[in-house]
Image 1 (cartoon, one colour):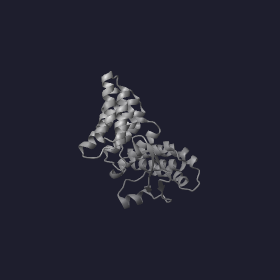
Image 2 (tube, one colour):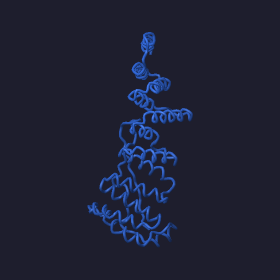
Image 3 (cartoon, rainbow, N blue to C red):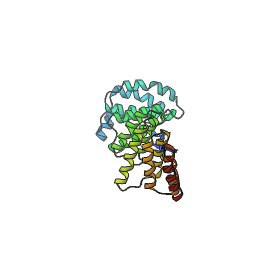
Image 4 (cartoon, rainbow, N blue to C red):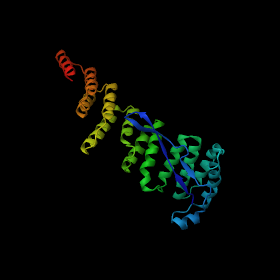
Length: 270
């Protein structure tokens, strides 16, 4: 059985719904396979795990040796990955093939390969349950960076369903709707997310509400803009939040003279 250790390093940058949303994943040097490929029987006897098939090990080992060689011909290893995948005979093989694909993707800084490797690992059913959510989060982040909004949403929701909370995937799910031009759907998801936090007695970050306000304003969705304007000052009635909310209300609504006057008075008071 092929054995390996896995270490991921998320790259976090500002933007989107939060100042520290993980919108991408850097897996540089992430997966390191041992330089020695263990035989399937030895692994099965020691760990009671499924054995790799003989045909798979024969296809896998030369590619793994290239991938584990410092300064190796990683492009050649990439070219041989389809043959490794074609040799998969069981789910233990599939898991190892995914790990190898991820490793080659790391070596080449190839995010498409990285995502393919992670997806193959998860599809094998061999990922420990406590790691599934994290891997789905990485898959979703890579899909998001590739602007595969539907794929990102599916993986990120799977991370949520698996109980992954280290980096809250929900704000990024909302962003997949906005990225796809589905502003109304994104605003509904975001409102549900905000309500869920409130119901749980958890703080609602201002930038969640501000993101919804911005999306509603830019899409000229007056009802939703009014909703998020009220939500913003109810959540945290700072002077700046009053300014932001009332300016949007003034911009998206057709107000008569009296309503405009009332709005200006409210601005003065707040």
